[in-house]
Length: 94
Figure 1 (cartoon, one colour):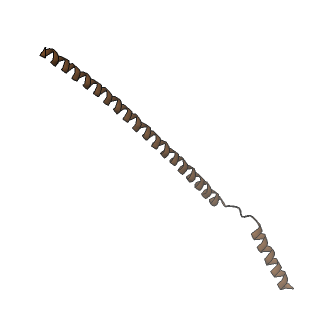
Figure 2 (figure 1 turned 60 degrees about the vertical axis):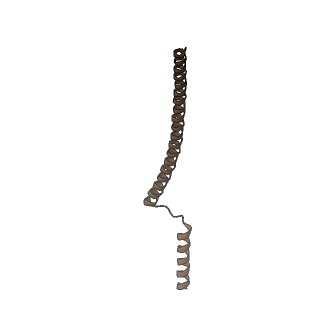
Figure 3 (figure 1 turned 135 degrees about the vertical axis):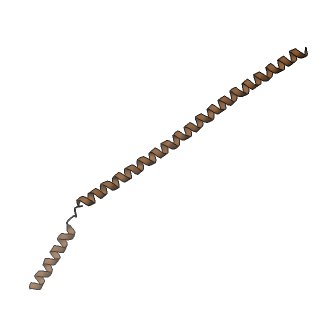
């Protein structure tokens, strides 16, 4: 009978141990908070990277537009200068 009571006691203790939810200790909770913080930081860095990519693309587009605009102005000035030289040459020939 003692043996039976001992087996029952061990079984009850085992079930009690397995049935109780295990609380995380302070180190486990701190580790989880660090994991969450690292995940949040990673997400934010990814967002910053995407925003930097967009800003760089926008800046590149703005530079291209400015260069095109300056190129158009130079071309127009060159055309005007050529016309002026041709007009002067025609007046000299006359």
